[in-house]
Image (tube, rainbow, N blue to C red; front, top):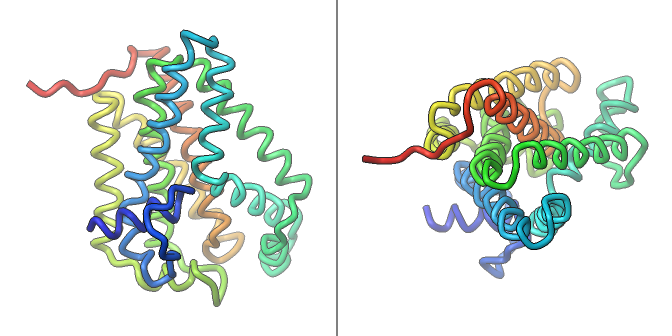
Length: 256
């Protein structure tokens, strides 16, 4: 289990806990811990923003947090979002869309998607505030990575070769269950009574993305995993903002 956690952290971030290169056959077991790694990344970003806000003000602190997140993950999922948007926006056929996604260059669709993503993150971070972000961002990041677990177990690969194909064929129901349960526990502990609303919002986004990808591409790719992950993260943060405005501030579960 510890080895799987290390592989998950090394694959999703730039933190090198081992000198070994992660190989495709090691990922199926590690996918279960993607939500945990996501929560840790979100917690690190939120912690930096919380610590820097009194010294630098909220806007500068948020920008530093976003930069730290990009450096920590190598903008891994953001790159997937850009490639997926270029392919889905510029490719009118399934084959053409998949071909465009293989191109590492960013086109107009991908550039616009990245600008809108960071604009949405900045606005949502600022609206939630540093204290609420400490609870909301780890949950949103965990649910975003959980979308990878769900899509891998649910949909086939849109390609016939590549790492995503090998992983999709090897993921077991037990692995998927552990990944989903981990995300649910993180949401329940950090956001308490708001957790069902946040999880339901994330679930709707994942289901919608799954049906769209099945119809458009016949399955998933590595790029679409990244795209759905950041989209789920953003919609979950939006749900957290709505919850705090309509109900009450998020509150961590207190064990008695």
